[in-house]
Length: 62
Length: 249
Image (cartoon, rainbow over all chains, first blue to last red; front, side, top):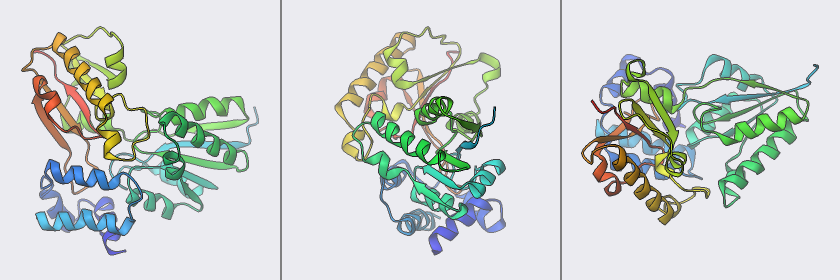
């Protein structure tokens, strides 16, 4: 559960040095990407696949 | 009064795993059963991992056509389980009593039976918007309405004060939101048109409206689209959006 663990790590320790770098880039999501994410949240999305989407998009945009 | 069963009403906050309070985590860990109705699979997994026994209410929610029927089915399920347990927690997105009909119904049903209700406040979109948009309600006050309620009723509005309209992204929608077609239904467009006309009676067409959505993940910013009221029908409004109209200066 690599992606889920990454997401949880950021959520529970957002101000670690590593995660602060991600926070520093926290305006990288444009409206369209966010809306795609919202659509995926609607229902029945596999948790790891879902977290992958969140993390992959984040990494690509950094 | 000796009340045997306890039902905790708690909120997960808005941001995944970051905004759960300490007392909420304790309730989740110590409950015989945790029911949850949340927005995304990561949050569901987080609550499930924390609890001894848990059940997602998503299936029940999506099994009905209207949200009203879904809420009734969920309330019946939770109350039925509370009667068989000592401690049960119901957890929903945000704050348990902020724009959540299910928890209000649960309170009414619990009062009819021998169930003790314990309410734990959570972080809601209200907390997030005040913080993210630096809204100073101490200066000009605040008016806040659920968007559909605002459209359908003639509340007296003071344009020199802040105005917040909750759930503007699902205006007029009574169905369970299971697809984009429901989200972009004709009724929603009609209601948004009525909202625009109502706002234009109060404000100039160039007065701004903020379409705000709180951050759902720690590494993702909140979203805030600032447009003139005249453009309200030309934008795609996020289903979790809140509208904020600043005071006329």
